[in-house]
Amino acid sequence: MDTPMIRQYKEIKSEYGDYIVFFRLGDFYEMFFEDAHICSRELEITLTSRDPQNKVPMAGVPYHAADQYIAKLVSKGYKVVICEQVEDPKLAKGIVKREVVKIVTPGTITDLNALEDNKNNYLGCVFKRKDKFGLAFVDLMTGEFDITELVSSYPYHEVINEVSRFEPRECLVSQNVVKEKLLNKNLKENLKIYFTLRDEDYFQEEEAFNLLISHFGEEKIVKLNDNKLALMAAGACLKYLNETQK
Image 1 (cartoon, rainbow, N blue to C red):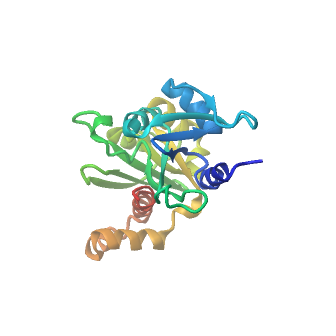
Image 2: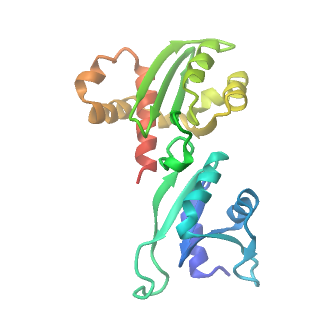
């Protein structure tokens, strides 16, 4: 039977299934189950067990040194969720309340020590509808935001060339992009871009326009109204940044 703390961990993990959860426990961030195995392997830290009876795999790092471990995971393409204690354990009635306070991904990391000098760290988006593509690239550190809309058919040289100009670390992609095996291979394997897959309904025209107008102002966005797919890609980037930059 799970302890209350493990149940709390599982509830948080269920919301962030493809993220590694750094779960604050006193002076350490602990990782459990499959996350513990991954961190033990990738970070070269000891794999232990919190509950010998139930054999819950566990690995941990000191909270004051967490940034370097997170940076190492992100450099390998992993995404990390930071779950903090948000009340004093001494005053807690029952299990200590915890909440996700930060999300770190390859395209949204802002730790200068984890970034290459004199090189942008772009989050990209590639959205496909029939033979048209909307592309967007944003650098969270500099504020640079570029969008492009183009027509491209197999073998998609135009898309590959445009994406290679920016070399994003992470790219939001729609299902239609993943289905194109050659394009998928070129972006993931040849350009070594980490994919974050989103369903088609993540790319909503009205929502994208509202987000962009709120951020950039209506005058600038209206001028780009003929580039709807590019704006939808840009809107998806903003949406993702809002989700990750807590």
